[in-house]
Image 1: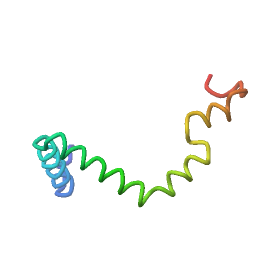
Image 2: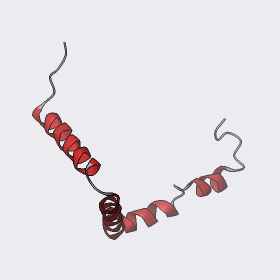
Image 3: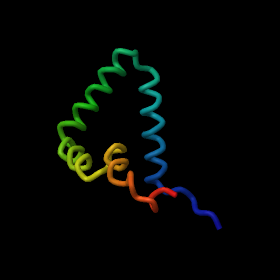
Image 4: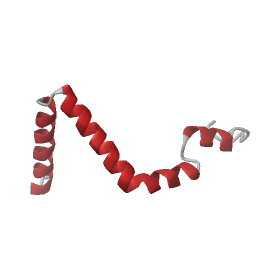
Amino acid sequence: MSRRPGLGSLLLAGAAAYGLYKVSKMSTQERSDLLDKGKKLVNDNLGSLKSTLGRNGSTPTARESNFANDVSYGG
């Protein structure tokens, strides 16, 4: 028994398709500006989260130094 997709998933798929269409029609400069704007938005609103995650060992180098001498880690 298969389920039909709900209205929410159809709206999400439509929004994603429209977004891809709009990005494909942008010039290189417009895409670059949009990327910079997105990075600024993330840094302004989620910058503290990024620094918090970096402190608790979520970066690859932090994991390497934490588990470098652990024989049971990774194999």
